[in-house]
Length: 327
Image: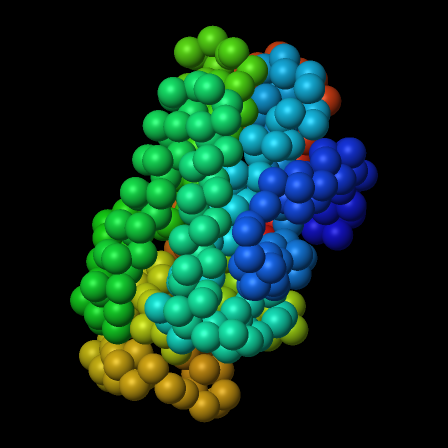
C-alpha cells in the first residue's frame, strides 16, 4: 500500500501543488475568523482525492490547462470539508484528521456557519465555469449529501437498519461526490457524452468502494492511523455494513448483546474487542470486503472506455489504492 501510494503521489505532484494553491487562493472570505475555521480542517492534511479525480478526469478527456482545472477542482474539497464540519457537529465528534473538531476549538454555531460558507463558495466557483451542467451537478451533490446525512441521522442507533438503506446513505454521502468530481472533469474538457458517462460510472463505483473501505477501517485501524477514535461510528450510533451483516447472521445471544452495545453507544476496550471478534466470526468484515471488491471491478471496467494513457494509469492506481484500504 505504501509503494502504491508513493507511486501515485510521485505522478501527481504538480496537480497536488496546483490544488493547494487553488484551495487557499479561492477561499476569499471577508472575515478572518471564517478563514481560520475553514483552514483548521482544509489545511490539516487530507488526501485531496476528490479534486485530484476531477483534474485527472479532465486531462483524460484532453483538458490541458492545469491552473484552470485546479480552480474548478477545489469545489469538491470545499464540499467535502463542509460536510465533515457539519457531520462533526451533528455527531458530537471529538477528532478530525488528528485534530480537535472545529466545533470544539470554536463553537458549534461558528463551525456550522463556516460549513455553510464553504458550500456557498463551491456553488460560486461552479457558476464561474459558465457551464449550466456543472452548476446542476454541484447543486445536485449538495442536495444528495444533505439528504444522506438526514437519512443517517433518522436511523441513528437503529439496530434494524438494513443493507438497502445503508447503501443509499453511502451513495448520497460519498459516492455522488466522487461521481460528480469525475463528471465535472469531463464536462470542463468538453468530452463526449459517452466519456462523461463512463467517468460518472467510474467515480460512483470508486466512491462506493472507498466508503465501504472507510467503514472497515473503523474496525481494523487504531486511533493514531485513523485520525479519529477507533469505533467512532458505533459510538455515534452509526451502523455500517460490517455490523449490519453480522447482526443479520448472529445467533440470538450474540445478537442481543450486540444490540445492547449499539443502543448504549458507549463501550470499554474489551467490549470493542469482543465486538470485533463477533464481526469476524459472523462474516461482517469479509462480506463488506467482497461487496467493495465488486464495486472496484466495476470502476475498473468503466475506465476501459478510454485508451491507455498516463492519466488512465494513475486512475487505475487510485482504484488499487482504494482496494488496498479494504484488504
